[in-house]
Image (cartoon, rainbow, N blue to C red; front, side):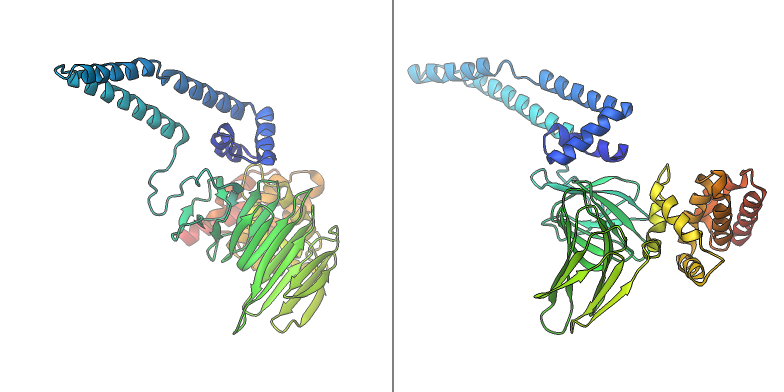
Length: 413
């Protein structure tokens, strides 16, 4: 479902009829369900009507007639001197027209000039193909036709135009929602180009996608070699989730859900079937390696991203439950713990968010496991969740949270 931030960022394009049908329907569905956003939409409509009414140039015909009359009179009577009156009328009409243009510029907030590092609204003639809905830090975007990179603050829900290039730094993850309700997540130090809602180019790093219900998403990439790069693609069927990553001379794609339908990875002129729950890796010599995957462990890198937002994403609870349930009992469970610990302090956030929000009695054991893992990883970023857990009625959770807060305070001194 579309968030309030996303909806409000698209009200202007909706009024100007710039959105695709699916995106327009999604905004209107949200307005039907959210009273606050609906009031803002009604207020914007009222302002638009008021501006149009206030700036209607009822006297234009009379002003034109007033200009033409002295001109005709001047032709007929060369001795007449209507010059001062004509100039005054022309200035009045020009001023009114400038006011009209200025008012519409203000209403649409068109960025005539954009300072470096500040994101302006993409040109109206360029379709919006996605919206940046969350990130763990600043994301950089290069708009179509621009050579410079702008910064998007992680708290903004920002429309992204067709042809834009997005880049994350070494400690930043981000998530986009396409205009047809697909999802795209980009790992740290990644870069993508949004050629369309269903065509994403992975330039470097790792990407996860959830295809919409009615269409597939194609992920394009290239295997680098000394001569010509080998072009490759992964077709993600509708309603399926996949992730792909590329290195210098190898690419891999994961069908990281057993619920996925069979898919195909194409490298050069060759096609390779990808079965549900399978990872396929191919190098520049087209040597193929296939291994089975577990859909929960392949998504560990996404946990810090899922912990963003209020309320916490339901997907976080599902993934954490699957990861935490085996910990402490088998070799596989030890592997899960190791992967979570590799996230460092960023890994404490999803653990503590899960422990603080999943309060059902049957979740207590997993909540305790989460806090026990997080107590060694947490830093300043976790203080909000720790403070909430310090007041938890369970004595183990509250005691661990208090001790962790004391440890963080001591380290800061």
